[in-house]
Each structure stands twice: as structure tokens, then as C-alpha cells.
Length: 401
Image 1 (cartoon, rainbow, N blue to C red):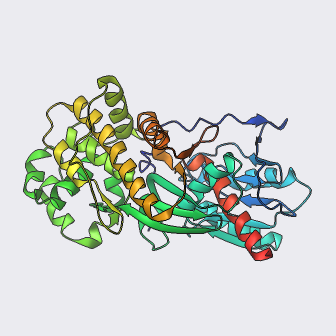
Image 2 (cartoon, rainbow, N blue to C red):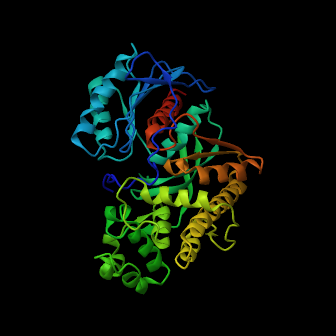
């Protein structure tokens, strides 16, 4: 799995914010109070973040220090800013870090800097799976440094999974350093690989092809030069790798509804869908819009297929959101029947979508569950370094015990 391209970010939705941190007195750093009930460590933990909205972090006993948001690491200028940001974090503490945490993806520039920094300091480097870190970031923000099990819903545009595939719609059982993937979305194909993440019509075509309606692609998207051959691309797995990403499901919905076929700005498709849904108002979920298999695979193909025949884009966008929220709630309830925990953590960049996150929070809270989501930090990659540090802290605690 290659590093993602810039337009592969419907999850951030041009809202890097939701980051209201305290001023440290140093204009280059911000802090978040991070006290909790976990075991204290003898030193800080440095975490390098990921690819999008790279924001390195230093987790100490009582606080987390953050560098400025360095942006996406897809340009030489952005990459050159990482090492000075790391140096500023290290200069803020007299104690060297115990470990340097980083994303599981080996080709991220942040990973390379993490490995080089760990080698220079003579400390271990720890790779942390992307979605585990998303859940850890929310738990850290809420001061949850214990090892009580939680169910994590991690939904975003892309993140490297522990199996080497592109994840992004995951149910995780998290218990400190331990993370188990217990469910995921039914995969969609990425026709043309990374290009599909920038062109929602391709994701719409992938859905049609998967549902036996591939013959419609050439006519429906006739103004797209590649449409006539896309069914052939979809028939070749090497040209159409799978992804469980919820962000790509948003893209498919936007393409099917004619809301956005090609993105020219970050998150254009997802932002347009959310705006239409908010303006349209309330309506009931589609009762037959999803299926859940015995092994907890959530299939949203029925919902997307109904959108393919929807004439009113705004109504379709509203229906997509309310049905998606109902499907995710049902999925979580199925998992909780097996996991026996009472806390659900919502993380990942798709939680920037306030329509979806509000629906989920209400539905789950009314069922008596404790629902934790990002409040001051970004739920997306701008806050993920804190989650990497949270996981690393738990791994060190396990090692000490």
C-alpha cells in the first residue's frame, strides 16, 4: 500500500480544527492536559503522527505537547518542517523520550523521521496501527489511560491495516496496548488505485459493478473518458485493490447521486453530502439498507444501490446519513452482545461529519452506553500522534510488568 495522495482525504473535510489547546508560552507548541488513572512512566513519549495533517506530539506525565499542524507530507516543504518540529518538542523537556512512536506505514515521511530520531537517541521505535491510534487519541483526551476494554469505531479515508490492506471502516476491541479487529465494512474496489480516491464516479462504478450493474457504468458516466473501460479495470484485482474505508463509501454515494464526480478540493464529495443532508432535514432510515454477517462484516451495498436510483440528490444525501447512522448503531449493538463492555469510542476523520457523529452519539447514548468522541482534538490525523503515544505508553507499561 503506497502513501495516500492528497485528495484521498474525505475524512478531514477541510476542518483540521476542533483543536482548542492551551498556549504553552512557546508560539510553536500547544498543550493538552492529559491526566488519567493509568500507571505513570519515568519519561515522555514522542510520537510522529501520520501522513495527513502531520502534527507530532510529546506525551508527558501531566500533559501532551503538540507541534503546529505541518499539513500533508506530500511536498518537500512540508517534509522539511518535520525535523525542526520534533526538535522543538524534544527541547521542551529535559528528559529524553523513552520511545518514538509512528504509523505502521513504512513509507510515510513521518515514519522515516521517527526511525532516524529513535536511532539517534538510542531508544526503541514502535509502529502503531493507524486505527488503534485513532481510538487511543480519543481515550487519551478523556483521560482514559486504564486497560478497561472499549469498543472502538474507527472510520476514515484510509489507514494501513495490520494485514497490509487499506482499512477505514473498522470495529476494534481495544484494551490498552491490545487491539483486535472484530468487524469491518464490506470492501469496495478502488478502480485505478489512488485515482479512485480523487474521483468519486469511480467508487460509484465500483458499487455498480459489485452489484451486477457494471453495464451501466459507460452510459451513466459517459462524459468521463475512462468510463468505457472501467468495467475491465474492475475485473482485474491488481488494478482495483479492495478497501474497507467508510470515506470511500461517502465518495460512492456522492458519485451515485451526481453530487460530485471528480474532486477539485479536499473532501469536496463528503462536504457536499453533509451540507445537502443538513439542509434537507429528517427522514426515516432505509430498513433494508444494510446487512451484518455472522463475522461482523457490515454490508452497505444495499444502501448505496438504492442511491443509484434516487432522483433527488438532497433526499438521497439525507437518506444516506440517517441509514448509515442506523447501520453503524446496529453493527455496534451486534458487537457489544459479544464483547460485554459499555463504552464506545468514536474516532477517525469521518467523525468530522457533525450530522453523522451527532446521530451516532444520540443513538448510542439513549441505549445506556458511554460514548466518547473527540472534543478538543481533531478526530482525524491531526490528533493521531497522541493516540500513537497512548498505545506506546501501554506497551511500555506491559513491558515493565
